[in-house]
Amino acid sequence: PLALIAHTVTVWITVLVTLNRYHAISRPVPVSATAAVRRTRLQVICVMAFAFVYNMPRFFEHQPIDKGQELNSNVNGTNFTVIEIRNLGDNKLYQIIYSNILYYPVMYIVPLISLAYLNARLIKGLKELKHKKEALTGQRQQDDNITLVIVAIVCVFILTQTPALVNQILWAATTGNDEQRECG
Image 1 (cartoon, rainbow, N blue to C red):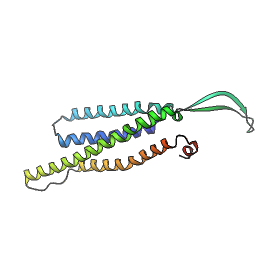
Image 2: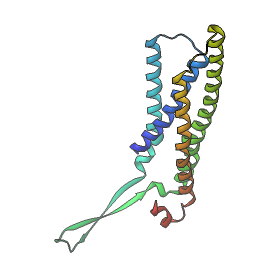
Image 3: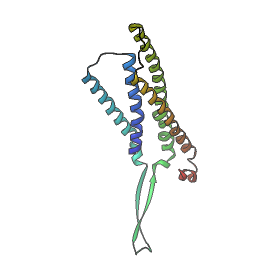
Image 4: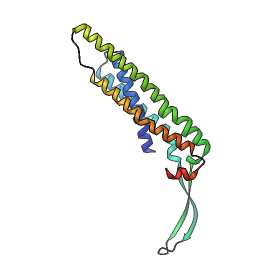
């Protein structure tokens, strides 16, 4: 669950950074440094809270249940307690709603569409800004490196998130076959 929380935070922080950069390029409004830092902190806290709440069910996917039965073992006469694992992750309704219906829009579709749109707008805004600088100064200016880095990050995000989507689809497709799911 903690790794999935971190994954969710990573996805949405990428969207947040791209959105903030988009606003800086397309709507450059002077904001005090204190207000900008405060706003950014609030946004990051909101993303972290969302990631925690969204992934909360993951903490309950696997729970050991003590059946209270003891068995004698041949290994040094040690007694073992039989424990049954209740797996919320194997519940069909849970898989349909949480693992499929919620996962795709929250972790892939909405971030991907947002990033693709913002990335296209960033590139367009960067070109417009470059033309304005050239018109004002009469010289060719260097590209805005921060925006180019964000564009590169978004491209890497899209390439690295696609296998996670494929994995999720394969996991959903093998829900009826325990042998295939055990393979991982």
